[in-house]
Amino acid sequence: MKLLQVLTDIFKRSFIMEPGEKCKSIIEGLAEIRVKSNKVFYNPVQEFNRDLSIAVLSTYVKEYKEQKIGKTKHLKDCELHDVPFTILEALSATGLRSIRYAKEIPNITKIIANDLSAQAVDTIKENITYNSVGNLVDASHDDACMLMYKHKNPRMRFAAIDLDPYGCPSIFLDAAVQSVQDYGILCVTATDMAILAGNSPETCYVKYGAVSLKTKCCHEMALRILLQSIEHHANRYSRYIEPLLSISADFYIRVFVRVNTGAQQCKKTTSKLSMVYQCVGCDTITLQPLGATKPNPSERNPGQLKFCLPAAPSVGELCLHCNQRHRLGGPIWTAPIHNMPFVTRVLEYVTENPHLFGTAKRIAGVLSMVREELPDVPLYHILDKLFGRVHIQTMPILIMRSAILNAGYRVSFSHASKLSIKTDAPARLN
Image (cartoon, rainbow, N blue to C red; front, side, top):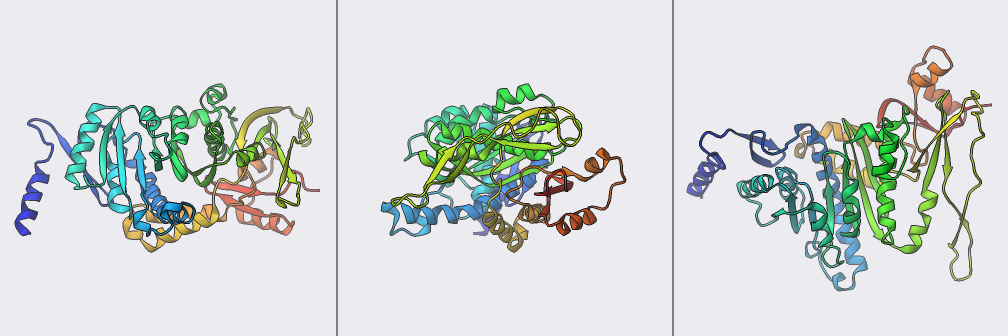
């Protein structure tokens, strides 16, 4: 065994090095990869993204397998380890994420690390061998969309698909929502924050099917625009999403959504989406739902719902508070953007295993903030912006929270901004 270890170490030290070519070693989590300088994309800032993804998937694998055993006839007598869990990393670059998934997430069946670049695929193959995960990770040289379309058949779908592009993910969403299993999970990153944050609303509509607004709550609005875009793609195929966790961090947003099939559930989509009126004077946000539901029980189905159209518009021509005009944006997702029980389980996993994550403290902090957010209150206010509009000195945020609570309303922070106030209090308190 000692001789084998010595030979392995010698092999690793000489791995992928070519005469005159510089190569750097990167260690993250349990993975160590070798990257030829400047030839393959690697972003160290995204370690938080990768750590969080591992925590989410590690928590989700067990839930997915238990659900499959409970609802699939041929799996009813199976153990958890007998239920397959396959992952596609559609845009793999160095293969680091896939290798970390293989080494750090338990009970994985197979991972496909795909990239369109031949150089990237060569690096992926070398790093798979270097980390001895060839039994779990396969390198793929293919167009990401075409690879996913090849797995549309329900028997070939992936349990998890990870999309982490540089820029906008929308071109991959149509293929992704078709190639993920029922009860499977999509992990989607968007880095084109300038577009999502309102700097180019017309481009945002082209890419995401929604008009973005330049507002102080733009980071949460970006999350809600991305979620409605994924839902829109899924609905075309009688599928729908359930957001598990939606995060705004650094220069990107990241969402984790569960995908299921059901034409009846898809009918509820309009009640989960709203247009957004923004006052140009005081920045007050008013939502206009696209649809609504109300109870319509019958003998056969006591929980039956009736779908209807809400009254519109939800605002007058001019703002009630400052008599200025409105801008119109959206549609955005206005249903909850987190599954709070799931967030709690992920947080517990991270706090119980802090040694597994280089960014464990940050993950725990963000998830703790997420868990305190009001789930049924879309968007938020920024404290200094509120007080600036009425030209008075900004009060401490804790005093502001106490004042809102004493007035009988609910209040929380948002993880997306340290000066945020999320509340169900109306814009004007009588």
